Each structure stands twice: as C-alpha cells, then as structure tokens.
Image (spheres, rainbow, N blue to C red):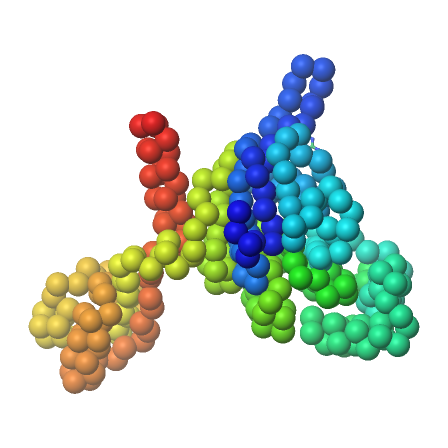
Length: 317
Ligand SMILES: Nc1ncnc2c1ncn2[C@@H]1O[C@H](COP(=O)(O)OP(=O)(O)OP(=O)(O)O)[C@@H](O)[C@H]1O
Ligand SMILES: [Mg+2]
C-alpha cells in the first residue's frame, strides 16, 4: 500500500442477490489505489461495475468481501465521508428551490455558519458559471446546469476527494466541453484534491486524467498513466489541400495515402518530421492548405490493446 493513495480497494467484491437462487457479481476482486492529488478516470462499458464501485467507496453499499480505505479510514466508518464530495449519476434537487437555496440547504446540513455559507454560495455559483441563474428555481435548469449545480454542492465541504459518477452523461457536445473545463478549473483551484470520476467516453478521460482504470465485467483490466498508454503511438496527420496541382501531387505528396474530400483532397502523413518537411514544401509551392489535423491513435485503441495483452497473458497462465 502506497502512503500517497487516498482511496485503496483491496480484493473488493460485490455480489447482489437477485432472487432465491440467482446472484449477480457486479464487482469482482477489485484491487485499486487512487493516488492523492490526481485526476483519475474509471472507465468501462455499461454494467461494468463503475457505479457499484463508487457506491461502495461512499459507504452506500457494503462490499460482500474485501476492504476499502478512504484517507486511512474504512469506508464503512461514516467519518470517512467527510473527506468526500460526490456527484451522483443523476443528480436531483427539490425543484421549487432556487440554485442559491439548494446550496444554502445543503450547507446548513453540513453545519456551515450563515456568513461563511453566503460567501461560499456566491463563490461556488460563480465557479460553476451559474451566477446568472442563482435566483431561478431549479425546475427551469437544463441538464448541464443541474450537473453544474451538483458539482457546486459537492464542493461545499471543501473535500479532499471528489467522486463524480458520469459527470458528462446526457450532456450535448457544448455541455460536455463546459463540464470538462469545469472539472479542470476545480482541480486547478485546488491542486491537492483528488478527482475520481467514471465515464464511458474515452475523450473525456483522455483530456482530463493522469491515470485511468479500466473495468470490465467487474474486474480491473488495466490501471495505467494515460501518457504511458498513448505516448508511443505513431502520430498520423491529415492535410487537406484545395485542388492541388498534378505537380504538387506527384512531386511532394506522391508517397502519401490520398482521398477526395468535398473541398479538395486529403493526404495522410506519418510522424511530425514528415509533416514539417511536407508543409514546408507545400508552402514553397503555394499550395492552398485548408486544414492539418492530428490523428493520434485514441486511448480506446491503446486500452483495447492493453486489455488484449492482459487477456493473452491470463490465457497463458
Ligand atoms: N442493486 C442492484 N441489484 C442487482 N444488480 C445490480 C444492482 N446494482 C447494480 N447491479 C448490476 O451490477 C452490474 C454493474 O452495475 P453498475 O451500475 O455498477 O454498472 P456501471 O458500470 O455503473 O454501468 P453504467 O455505465 O450503465 O452506469 C450491472 O449488471 C447491474 O445490473
Ligand atoms: Mg453507472
């Protein structure tokens, strides 16, 4: 056990009883250590055990076997929860209260005194970009606004650990970008805090997390730094050129894979060195470059490979 881990799961299993003779193992012998101060992603397809893991960390569900420690305290000890701020999968609030009233209500439950709570409410509504709607009833809030209010609520007790269950779920592309940016801001505001969030969207994890844990059928398949999963990947770039001349195609781009696109032709280039060389030649030849897009292999493929490797090594043992 590392002294720098704020959440430690040791051989954690959760089996649900579905009837007299039927059971479902949602989490199966999970060992995981979440390093303090990092943003860590919990990734996995639907039904892989993410929410069950999170509910056990929060002490809402008791593991069938195994042990969970939060900052050195058992997750079954209610005091472990004072370290944690939590965003549930589908946050719901009393709809007739305003955003400000919701924060005041939960702040009162936490025992925060009036003057401090008023300041905190102002600060948090500003942080989550809801200042303009702080006097509106939450029944009029969009999904994205409700998620952001729930993040503000999770921050009320200055938690060391933030646990977000699918913070981007149900948001449109703009909402997702706002939520990613908010998570980034929250971590920048308090770099010592740990953010542990689940998602099945790889881009979210890739852009935010230092490390990622991949769950599959309740088992941990991979836990690795995101950088180590994608660092060695070949970088491929796509250059789109508006109506390139035959000369440009034959002299500069002859070795590149090409395809026709609506606004001209696209050429694939491998590696930064080749990209720089070709861009310089295209510039000399006055080619009209419309776009250059990096096509780095996605985390999804890296994880899939890591996972395949694991299955291969499991099969051979
Ligand atoms: N209370 C319960 N009773 C019975 N089975 C349950 C219960 N909670 C979860 N499960 C089952 O355990 C498995 C894991 O569920 P869980 O909600 O943890 O997955 P998840 O990874 O969070 O999925 P999603 O991405 O859909 O949110 C699923 O097969 C689910 O049906
Ligand atoms: Mg879930």
